[in-house]
Image (tube, rainbow, N blue to C red):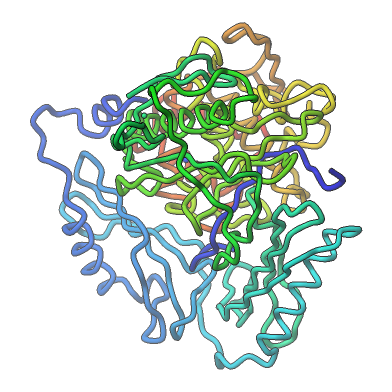
Amino acid sequence: MSRIRPHLRGSRLATAGVAATAVTLLVAVLSPTAGADEPPTRATALKNAASALADVAGRLGLTAAQGTAVRDVVADADGTQHVRYDRTYRQLPVLGGDFVVHLAKDGTYRSASRATKGAISLPGVTPKVSAPKAADLAAAALRAVNVGETLKRLTSKPELVVDALHGTPKLAWRTDAVAQDSLGNPVARTVLTDARTGTQIDAWDSIETASGDGKSLYGGTVPLETTQSGSTYQLKDPTRGGTYTGDAANKTDLCILIVCLNRAPATVFTDADNHWGTGSTADRSTVAVDAQYGTDVTWDYYEDVHGRKGIAGDGKGSFNRVHYGNDYNNAFWDDNCFCMTYGDGDGNLLGPLVSLDVAGHEMTHGVTSKTAALTYSGESGGLNEATSDIFGTLVEFHAANSSDRGDYLIGENVVRSGLGREALRFMDKPSKDGVSVDCWSTTAKDLDVHYSSGIGNHFAYLLAEGSGAKTVNGVSYNSPTCNGSSVNGIGRGKLGAIWYRALTVYMTSSTNYAGARTATLSAAKDLYGAGSGEYGAVAAAWSAVNVA
């Protein structure tokens, strides 16, 4: 396949403001007093936030022309509350208008995290560039990054927005251009166009990128929760929100970002004896076992460790499609169907992309879209990808599967000899893949998000394990620092606790690496204290990758 880029990608539906420590530890840190009051309810937090907004609207730049909509609510065990909002201007979505209101235990306003602090005011909201023209420009942009491909079923869907992510707020068209390549695989690009001049402001790829048992391809024999239907069993898990896995029958579709035109089927797998797969790809249900198991383990990680029930935090399950396309070297999460899709790989570069860390990576794109909604472009796009790599890795460790032990290699099980390396990405030294970067520089914003993610991955490895040579679960690592320092790790549990709190409470759609440093330091302060060793370790690990 001429277009294959062997990097995990994630597909996310663009929404307003857009372009995954054990629970006991988290509770113990935030609420050390036994018998403390229960955290405030969502309704209480929303009421308090609404009252606070009425008082501080001016400080947040809110005017009569602007509207707000709640995206997420986090209520800490100690009573503090954090309510995340998206913003509109004259009923148009504002990219970069998202903000988080932080409330004290008594519900009073404490502070706010804002994607942009600039005033939002436009002379008008009537575009000079028509929607069809914006659609044509986006289609041309998609063709330009797929040179040599004959694109089929190309569609473009413009939406009028206010862009506050790129300097002075301006009226813009955000257009999702979607097509199929010569092999029928989806390609997509989101293009942001100045609605007055027709100038392209930004553009980015939009594909980011049950009780029985099953013999999986990568994880050995694994437990599965299923649903009995008559005399057969469905690969559908009633204990995890109804999550299920279906067969895409090697078909493709256009369900990326827009209304589906020809959704590939996802017929639920069934089995007569509740023992699934053979451990070989000759049995089509084998990779379905891997996909369902990966979904189960990812659900369990977020619930067990962070108290998050389901990808959206609402207790509802997603679903998987396996055997997508032909020789498809990719896997992706799509908000449009709230589902995971897995290709079988071409057998030369990659095998079936249903490994644990791939599942954790892609499903974390769903978590990110429901929380910080990091824009999939520039440094925030690199952070988006790093977030998926970080939690995909933590999911793999959390599974404690002896057939697929946790490591800091991304996609090592799916890689074949034709790729020329042992994994898709390397968290201890990202540059080992030949394209990613270990250290931040002013050019990070210009890199592909899968390459600039190396900065966040390197930080995460250093924070968890520290610098220098060491062996973890039989894998040798030797992580350098960019400033010549020596960094001591604080463990994976604390890395996960800090990054999750930063993602869900402090990061916004425009957060860059400097902003991620601030967000994770705020999270470390909340969890462990400003003078703690953990707080100092976060600062040292960011400095070690040149983020000051």
